[in-house]
Figure 1 (cartoon, rainbow over the protein chains, first blue to last red):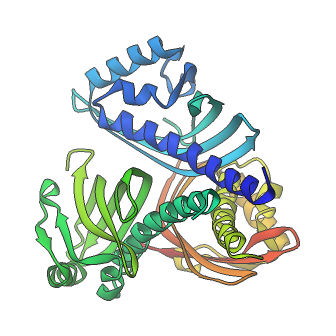
Figure 2 (cartoon, chains in turn purple, blue, red; figure 1 turned 135 degrees about the horizontal axis):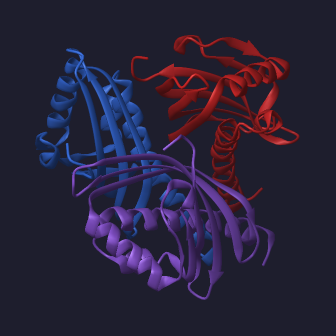
Amino acid sequence: MNNLEQRLQTLEDRQTLQDTLTAYLVAIDAMSSIDDILKCLTEDAEYDMSAINYPCFKGSAAVREFFSSVFNNMSHQAHYATNFHIDHITANTASCRSHVIGKAITKDADEICIYLQYLLEFKRGDDGWKICSIYSKPLLPL
Amino acid sequence: MNNLEQRLQTLEDRQTLQDTLTAYLVAIDAMSSIDDILKCLTEDAEYDMSAINYPCFKGSAAVREFFSSVFNNMSHQAHYATNFHIDHITANTASCRSHVIGKAITKDADEICIYLQYLLEFKRGDDGWKICSIYSKPLLPL
Amino acid sequence: MNNLEQRLQTLEDRQTLQDTLTAYLVAIDAMSSIDDILKCLTEDAEYDMSAINYPCFKGSAAVREFFSSVFNNMSHQAHYATNFHIDHITANTASCRSHVIGKAITKDADEICIYLQYLLEFKRGDDGWKICSIYSKPLLPL
């Protein structure tokens, strides 16, 4: 790979990492397909939402169960991600973070509004970059 | 066009699509020049804001009339776009979406706050990529 | 520099400008290291926050003093930047703007929420692009 191609690859990787997070958020807010969520994640993806009083879990089956419950309990969701930042990247791994504003309305009409930073780990496999870990850190008190 | 140039073009197109949406939002929030808004749109651009209780209209003259009214009635506007996502792109057309938080204050001091997703169609003509259709989909109840 | 390399450089510059703003916001919200803030700024960086009832100041020592005070008085901060837009760019200077939602909680539990546009000047020196001026313009009344 020559120098120009390496520089191009760096830009492409960065775009793909951010696009993967965006596709994930678009899918969770569409609330229509858990498969669209799973496409953005590795099979063994880990969630740690303990700091925002949600569960920790790991793996596609657990992700599916969690979002089934979310889609059952929520009437609307809207997650706005900004400040996408790469902390560290290698050929096949990346540590990133993104600020997120998470709004939701439950089916009981309760309003949720949380101000977060996601700490994200990505892995590149045969089918490209996927999220392998999401830690939700509150930026403001819940 | 060789492979490297094609990859570069893909990144440039993506950047230009997002920049066009940004320029549009910067212009509507500046509330100083309808021409700056029209520069981002095709002559026959369509708006469908029926899902958020605003009108549907089409074409530059109707866009000009709509924003004249907006600029007359609003004292402040702030639209925050995140989660820019390309659903489909060809050489000269693109279907994209973006989450948007829309805040406004009317001249009567009423506050508006809407949580949307724009569904956007773009066309590339002689003067580059422009928005040809905006559908405003509410993510949270109005 | 050939044409492809020039186009690549344009994309890289744009990414670096936005990344510098992001790194700055990540650092001010982490509230753990003023050095991480200063890394994003030129030595003689100017702040003008007069339009939002905060001070104007200039230079690293003044920046350090200001953020020492902020870190002492605030318990939490969360700044969400969107709509990053380049108004003008040359080889070593750039004028950009970005919408920002600024949320904070003081140690006295007062809540701050401001809807801004940053007007940003960047300079490229030996250690890359840095912010040399930030003007905070309110988009909504304070």
